[in-house]
Amino acid sequence: MLNSSVIEIYTDGACSGNPGTGGFGIVMKYKEQRKELAYGFKLTTNNRMELIAVIVALESLKKENSDVIVYSDSKYVIDAINLGWVYNWVKKDFKDKANADLWKRFLVVHKKHHIKFMWVKGHASNKENNRCDELAVAASKSTHLLIDEGYEISRKRI
Image (cartoon, rainbow, N blue to C red):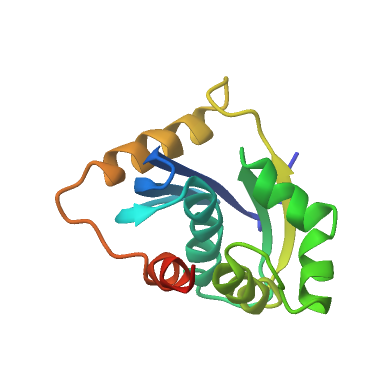
């Protein structure tokens, strides 16, 4: 049984093509409250959408030092955090690492809370993860797509 003061966050990213149009979906639950967020982008990657979903969810928390469980079907995100890869990337100043802009943004918000990261199997029986997928896909097909500036800048360097 979860502590009733824990905030549950479910996230998912989607991309049509990789790179391509993308989106992310978030479901946040706290006690009896529920909040859903989704945004779409003109050109991005799936990994960026998976990671930015986690970041946006954490940035939207109103109170610092919250107890949080983040559920994601992204091995890229979960393993980078739980296996400590991101901290090794910091030591090397993210040399030759994709999405450094987002990982740096993540590290800032991550320090503000007590977070446990849990991997869930995508497109399986997890109701909230499936809802995040629906939100992400719908956002990626929206007519009001945002520009993923970090991705655009990284493309220009190549």
